[in-house]
Length: 206
Image (cartoon, rainbow, N blue to C red; front, side, top):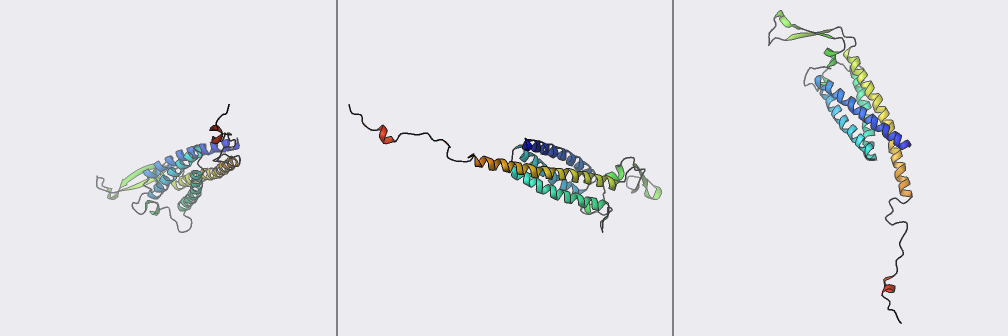
């Protein structure tokens, strides 16, 4: 019963984690955040692998998932430090875009309550002129939205790690008990007694 409840909980966590990862991937694509996009891609693959391993009773796949969740927690801690500008990190740098573009988080211009205004430089507006984008009235700054996203990811990942370890332990105990009762014994427990062939060939005398 404990294994079943832990397994069902892990299936639910993996499913929910997959949905949250897909949601985050969409917003990272909108903001051209290439480093998070790559990390989210691997995360989605490993979560699917963990979900498959949990459903199909494959402990090795769940081990891969458990190891990845630890790395995923570390990645999200880095994202939190990046947006909170811990140490020498700066949220205005192009680190998350691999210095390919100057884009920032999608939430920086589309956060809750944000009003986005474009003001052309030089006072002349045409198709080739550059515009200065002003964002005002945001109820919550974009860096805090990203921090909340990462904190939520850490919470789910920690729960997934705990339940993954529990399910792996339960699966291992079941396999050990199955071996103990002869589940993998190549010879059957009960043998059918067969008469020797020479007794079958023995002639009968009247």
